[in-house]
Image: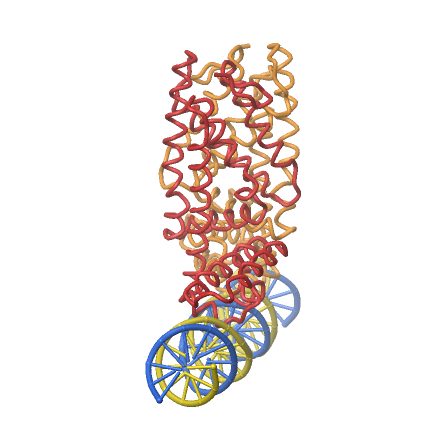
Length: 224
Length: 224
DNA sequence: TGCTTTTGATTGAACCATCAATCAATATAG
DNA sequence: CTATATTGATTGATGGTTCAATCAAAAGCA
């Protein structure tokens, strides 16, 4: 919903949601954004519809009007996060140069994109991740992209390994890179202020340089 | 989790004849174990004291007798998990051979120890991790060991890098290994298991082999 | 040893706060 | 005027906490 985003920015610009001509799509987006903010501030367990409504500058009843239930609001929020995440890395992959090493670098760097990797998004993701293990509905949306993402990294690693004649098992290396990203994400959201997004990205490139020295420098440039 | 109950019941039955002081400690432990099981099954948000009591085979009132409040029960549970984790890796470090590479291998492997890395423990950890974002009390206990752990891996990586003349920045490599472990943990936690604990450990060794080829083989042996 | 008293653990029902969901009333747009 | 959007008070259920009563184990006493 790119249209919704633009209109929503306008709504947020003027004072708290008084314009009733806001379309249904815009209001839904506004409530989803408020849900993300509330998740980041209060966590999943303490999130109440009253909080969300207050954050959005609306009344409590409106949530159940646009989203039938609290559960559905949360699922829609998760879907929105997953969609943003997916669009982000797919765009990065598309816009990258043709060489596998270029694509891999672009893909991994995309995970530390400012919009995707903001504290509020990370906190919201984290909240869902935790609940997902005991809730099949969330689990599905949390891991739906993962398989696809893993397939891409696996394929790129295989290509690079073949290209450079590295003596590695592509599966293990790809899995390690996937896990590395997840771990860095976790650090960025969990720890108080350990290191910046930029430093996380430097860590990724240091690792790529160590594993694929013919293809990556430690400073992040790609050799083709 | 039924296994845990049986074992716990056995411990409890064994101590039935001992002093009441011992009984109190046992009961607290029993309730903490029940809390971990319940967290694993229901997640943080849906955990109720009635669930915990039922899992432990006790009444609801007893929880507030031994732990003043639900909050305190959860904090004690987190402390217990953190202590177990800490003891596990410190023991592994102590029992390992003298070479830095041996110590590092032992340290990293300890994270995939069966007791520490059980689905129930992972799920409980995850629940706290997520809530820790918005709760300073949890945050403190979640990250208290991390600094110490990071310091050890950093020191070991520095030693290995110097020993082998690798052209790496120790900080980045150590951070990458820390993040790798966290990411693998996260993967193992998801209910639909993509790979086993053993495979996670193989991934760690594949990575060590790629980064430090003079010190580690891909099959997990350490060269000194 | 047997009997009584005291302490501490345990129970379950009652109490009360919180919060999702509902709904009748109201405002706005077309 | 009609349909749609919005409000906020109300409701009903859930769940944490409290508490008086019960029970079992230890201590005191003869």
